[in-house]
Length: 233
Image (cartoon, rainbow, N blue to C red; front, side, top):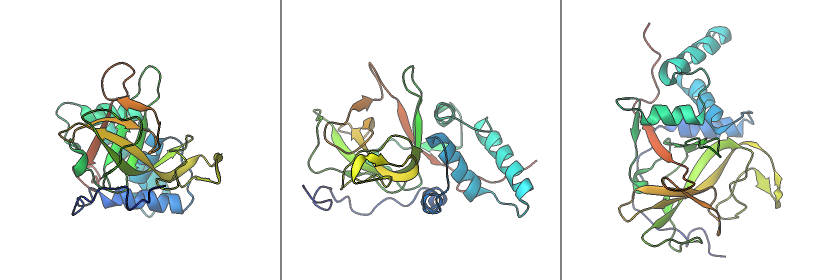
């Protein structure tokens, strides 16, 4: 097996963290053993934990709910809702990251819901790093990148010992659903635009493109304010 160090391309200085409150908060949330449901709920919970606080727990909970609704149009946004809000014309909350080499810790990747897929949301925990040796499936005029992420899921992000999912050990069947860290693989075109992904950085993992038959569109977004401020009444 190729070592982790040998399998990656050095990119020079990594981009500055996009929103360390999200990436660090996600890792703290996982380390504390806090439970969470879907990836979208995980992202929502990290915002609540890191962005707003009141010493009165009742006021704090009410404020969290009101602020999430204010910014995202729902008290419990789904991945589909986050995707809609991230890509809505004229929105000012999120700047979309259009080049894979610019992705940084604290960015948020959102997979949209499709007719056959419920969508998913992850918090990026570090820069995407290009694989020096592409893994199957390999497509002409594309590059492959390993993206470290934190999320909550019931599906393991592969069983690689190099690009490891923190929720499994031993065999792939020994997996604990919920919050954890892992890696996804991004495909980029020759200009660096993200055009596809696979759930894991493992050979043979299914690739989903942003357009075309069976597409699973996704975007990588960066909050324009970190933290999002408490709205003024």
